Image (cartoon, rainbow, N blue to C red; front, side):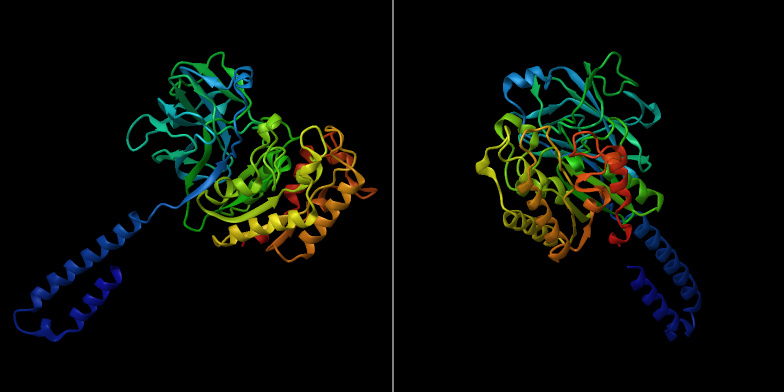
Length: 439
């Protein structure tokens, strides 16, 4: 539009029509008119620039347990507010929330919902409190296995800030969209407390429920890294309420460099690429092949994907949690990884493979480690490094292994179960990543 106006103005000034008698004054008025239109056009273009949404936080859901465990675990809500705490990666000038009813058995009725910056525990900054709406309405009904986006709210949120998302559930509702292993304390209180500055005497909640993601409005150059995997992505072994996962370390490094990239954690404890969770442990989630798209690729702004999954496919079969008949070969895992790579590349994303970390001596689950399973881990790592299937390799094995015992995690990095890193181990993982991969 602006270019067209400039061309027309140039033509009029060059044209001899304004040199004719009686047209000179008209020419001056026309030129002023065209300049005014051009200025208005330029300002309109600046204001009307389309929003660019980028995921800043997310959580991957698993199916709910049976009815008895739902009651035992406190996963049924009635006339209660859930104030859930999430930690953003990238900041932005506006926010919207993705509410989830994945794996739900009934519609999720949200009576009201608010969003605010969290200061401590369940306490929010009152000036940041925003009521969320859904097509202008204060509440919404979310069908089973669906998600709903809130209307955007204007709120400048910095990178690495905590948000409190408060959800009022007016009727008896079973939890859905559950991310069991949050490593973050959230809060439950009686009645509609969505606008309350804090929740008095709340019940603590160790899972994220009814939430799938938080998006921020960011510059058009901004994007996100989706990190897909198992408990080593989910942060098992890190300190709760401290944001010490390696994905948090990566997000901090990016923020310090002012790199406009969010980090989406799409990890689930015990997740496998090729098999769903066993019925006795539904919290381990459906297979990676089943959940990859909606947990990682479907979030807005994703440009890069990191895959750290496969060790549970190797280790879990033949334990009390999975029969030996679910054992997989290295070729099976390679085929599964190639599927993930192809699906991400179909969307124009670059995919990086992370090597499988050592787990020698792991015995928390009887039978999870054996000499044969160690040969499978090493063979899979050899393919990740040399198979040229990924767009790049992140060598977490090298970052964690004990030089004196290469099949084990270095003692200073071991959480104690010989499978998961501690805070120092996750710090080493996050610091080992070459940021130039995300160019």
